[in-house]
Length: 287
Image (cartoon, rainbow, N blue to C red):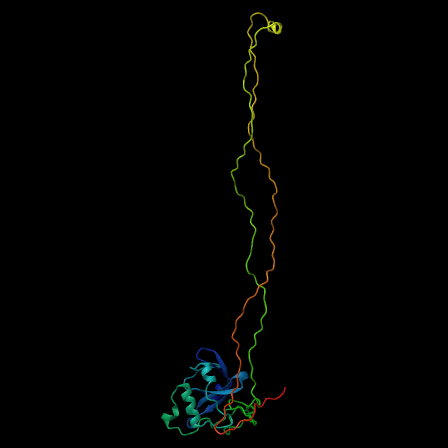
């Protein structure tokens, strides 16, 4: 049995599971008949908080406005549900303790009182607790219809079956970048160029009547020196910068396809009847 808990301190606190995930807020506190100590709290679980789940306080720890219990959230959601309109019987309590895997403290203390005789709905006027277990103060509607909801508070006279549908589309994101870089390379090239040069040629002519006058015009015996300039061609190179081409970056769109795989969940509803219950047609209605 939980120790050092009071209904006032527990009411409205937030319950967390063993991993620190939020389970829900305390809706009601159930007191043990023999000791008057809080033994159970109820929190809303299920879709949109449509069900009330009972959690034992035997191994709970409270800090400030939070209560941590040593159970996983899924374990709490799967706990046997208790009708809030009725008292918590010994059988109900035993089923809950078995579900949570802890020993029933009532078995060792010979506690024959029914846990949960006391309604923990807060009296907004006095702040007390109603021991007649009425539902007026809590504001919850526990009215049962013809097709009543046995898993928690009544929500409708029918189940809604839902399924997941896949919506696909596209999004644009950066896939990578391309860059143009210009750099300089060096290449050795060779070209063959024709060249020419002058060489000395000596021509000797005998003295004839035709050239005698020119030959004797310089005197009989003289010293002379004749000189000519020889020329030659050399291969030379000059480099010019010439534009070759223009290069620029652009994009083009290429169409393709991708396959997306996903697991879609769908609720199914099966009919479960007791032995001897007769069933009719499908009961489908035109919408």
